[in-house]
Length: 155
Image (cartoon, rainbow, N blue to C red; front, top):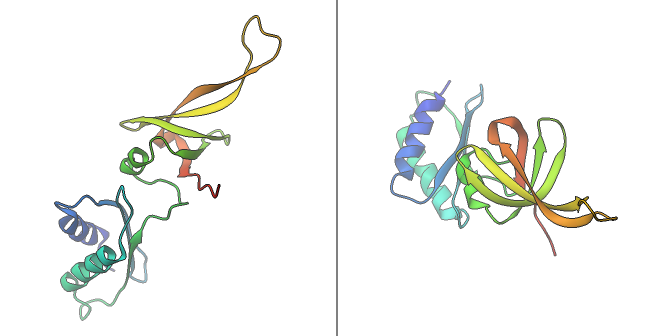
């Protein structure tokens, strides 16, 4: 079986000096290699092809046959690395907390593994008869949520 760390090292070599970042490397037991990269402005197919060729030129198919798939992290897929959070500041996201509650709002900030989502919701203010709509910040830690993903809007 092909070593995931070998593939990760090859990808990191190719990424050096580029604005792309590594999202994930997976190697299945039947040697299907899946590499996901991302970029703040999106991923170009030519760069995926270039990375694929770079990896293929450095792995020996004679020694071990494999299938290689290089692509971008899917737009509607859960975030896997901190850089994805940073790229979506100011954008609508959905967070599924460890408690099973979904929160939909705007990704406000990211600091290390912590992030804040601002949600427009009803709040009961003292002295007011009816709840008022206002932005409420919800703080999360990346390690303590089931997922966070970009909310695609077709408006």
